[in-house]
Image (spheres, rainbow, N blue to C red):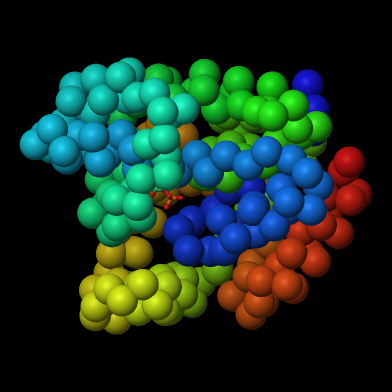
Length: 214
Ligand code: C5P
């Protein structure tokens, strides 16, 4: 088994950008575990179901074939997909169905890469509790809403600032308060608050920490 780096944190804290850069710098494979939950949410929505319906969500999770290209579907990036993801993610059977794929990715990264970076909400706590380095990347909810707003505008999607902030708070609450695998830093995670950092500074702080662990 190669090196495993776990990067968890709330939405729009900068963990996606950071994870991709870290993976590239070390030549590791990268898995955005949030895309798995988004894919489940989107397949429930496409089937005309309700993402909060535990049975429909569990069925979609068991039917998911993450290698078939679904993780790159642009529909996964929409806000509907994000909200649906955080609903299906609260269903224990959904989390259980997605666990094996994530652990296999970490243990035998695709392409024979010497290690893997997984980012999500529970990588350091549940998926890979023995990861070599764990980071918890966070930022204030206002900063994260601001970043999401900028991203939406860059993609040409009209958005109302107060709605974006409210959606962010709703998703934070669902992710933190659920009983199964709630969003929470692992005891041995390095907490990196990016509220006042740009992407380069966050990358420098992350690699300095990873260097002490690997
Ligand atoms: O990271 P991203 O915004 O794509 O995640 C979408 C949703 O998927 C999160 O709000 C969370 O509810 C869920 N998720 C999770 N566990 C993970 C990754 C994502 O519960 N490891």
